[in-house]
Image (tube, rainbow, N blue to C red):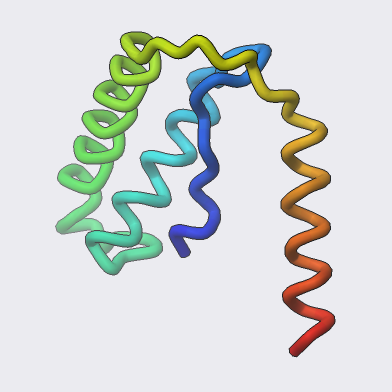
Length: 90
C-alpha cells in the first residue's frame, strides 16, 4: 500500500494539495489498517488524514535544496521502467 506514496519534494511544478492529501490518505490507511474505516472510526480517520496532510504541506514548504527540480514525466518514466523490469522477472 505504501508503494503508492510518491516523493513530493523538489518537483516543478510543486506538489499540489490533492497530491499531498493522497499521500496522507495512503499513510493513514497503512498505519490504521483500514482501507475504508467504519462509521465509528470515520471522523478520527478523516482528522488524521487532514492533520498528516497539513504537516506534510508544512514540511514540503520548509525544506530547502540546491538540487535542480525534478521533472515529473522523467520520474514517472523511471518508475514505469523499474516496474516493467521487476514484473518481467517474476
